[in-house]
Image 1 (spheres, rainbow, N blue to C red):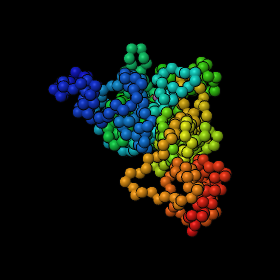
Image 2: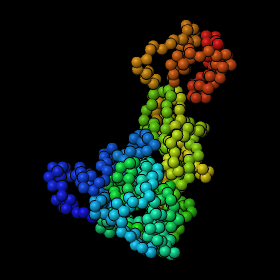
Image 3: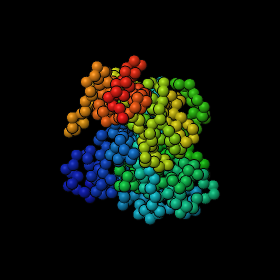
Image 4: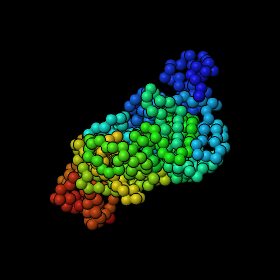
Length: 466
Ligand SMILES: Nc1nc2c(c(=O)[nH]1)N[C@H]1C(S)=C(S)[C@@H](COP(=O)(O)O)O[C@H]1N2
Ligand SMILES: [Mo]
């Protein structure tokens, strides 16, 4: 590891002029080869160690850009320089190895798109509250990780028959009496061809905060398994006894009553993530104009795949299937969307609920547990539907108008909440056809009484006949 003093010596003047906050990235981009990343749009839960959450409104694409990808670190971020970095593989192996990054790069190059979520994501929602970083919903992101299979490295070292766990240790060092951050994975997950040691994130070297120069990516499992700044991989015969293995990242074996304490013996290590969805648009507390609202979000299910996402716009009384987005990969989230005709002004609660390929469904309330892990309650956002109509598209020709008729004001009032009248005037339907259209609009939320329904169908059939 290169000390700050030595790097300063190397880069001299350039650094003397830069403010300290910017310096880190300058240093590592220039000297170490990490990708520069600008995390300034993230919500800072802690500056040191770095705990940065993504505002949900910025999660708009299947792949989360590096600048928007959350950061969760227990200890201070180590500043590593590629030239000096090595990875040691030892423990229960035939041939202990010490690899430079160029040695790692010589192994088979593989990429996987994997959603990483912190086990504590959503912790702030547990009731009664639990200690720890108070993440809301944005300690999650989806990236394309490129590197090598952990199995290839382990095979090169030759795992002995007694090897049962693989320990990951990063270069981050304990602060005071805080225990060192190490994690272990059981041998079958370690040997799985999708478990990676990644040196790239979305096509560039890892950003410093996300583990430069090499990190584990344990797909489908809660984020803490994906150890950053890896410097040592050790094959163990039995489970490690450190704090981050024996005490942290464990979950009650049986449901516990909210607020109770749980004996370590009644807990087991976390593993794969549960099924979950979040709504990213509209954002909680936001306002949308009455009319067509595109509700969207993401759903993921750890090692399973997302089978469906349902959306409710009436506080959970009725649910309708959302459309799942086109892009998918085995451990990656799916984007979903649902078009809602928001005709009633005022406050609304929108909910989303995912179901996975194993039949697991997002619960209405996630099981309380002492560390506040795996929050996956049905997602809810509260929004206001504003009185004004959606703004008209700029630069378009004037709209068609409805014929002079006593009913025209009623039709205008009901239909134009969601769309202009040209959508009506271009159609020529029978009375049965118009009644199907009107009923569809009522299903989609048009606020039409029985009496008006009959009058409107009659009006359309009279003026817009085939
Ligand atoms: N060395 C090291 N690796 C680590 C951590 C850490 O504190 N130190 N935090 C873990 C946790 S709890 C999570 S959720 C993920 C977060 O990855 P990210 O910071 O790239 O988003 O990294 C994991 N890897
Ligand atoms: Mo985490």
